[in-house]
Length: 241
Image 1 (spheres, rainbow, N blue to C red):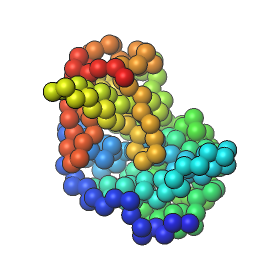
Image 2 (tube, helix red, strand yellow):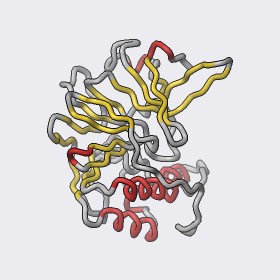
Image 3 (tube, rainbow, N blue to C red):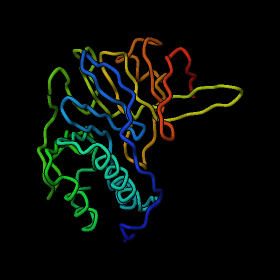
Image 4 (cartoon, helix red, strand yellow):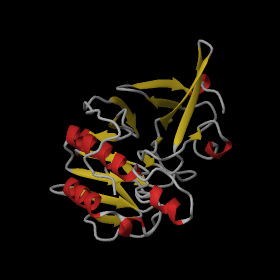
């Protein structure tokens, strides 16, 4: 097992966010892919997909086995920066229903330490529909806080205030003859779909047909994740894959 102190990348997050309003609630979008809700002292992350590498290995597909460590380090940096009293994990926190049971002892200890002294809410996802094994926190299908509702999968016709994950939004722009594709936040001001926080996750272009039930075509905005900042674009500026 890889020692937990061996780091893939070292970058301390500064708690600087791009503030937006969702259903009248002010939230901050962070370039790590996390959402910060200052009024509720709440940090939100989506689609951690812990133990994805080990899940694929069980099926004979060999991926680098360090995804859980790298995602945990990234999460620890965000928690250290914001010092939330509550963390909401928006589903697919583990890549399969047995992922939490496979969590190596060192990583379990790290995650348990991150949970100390704060409320922790595990929202169930399609990959992890049951409560994680041997970990603290409350497990729910969805949770309403103030005017916001946090769930894993966005719903067609949902009331304003939905914060969801699941779709791993990504966007592509073409500028000065170059094409750049990045994970992103996607919002129309009524709902927000968050990027996957896990380091071993793909992305679905927000111009894909799968997005039509959730956003009116070209009538939404994205915030591309960059190095130390976010890059906002209206959907009219985006290109397909």
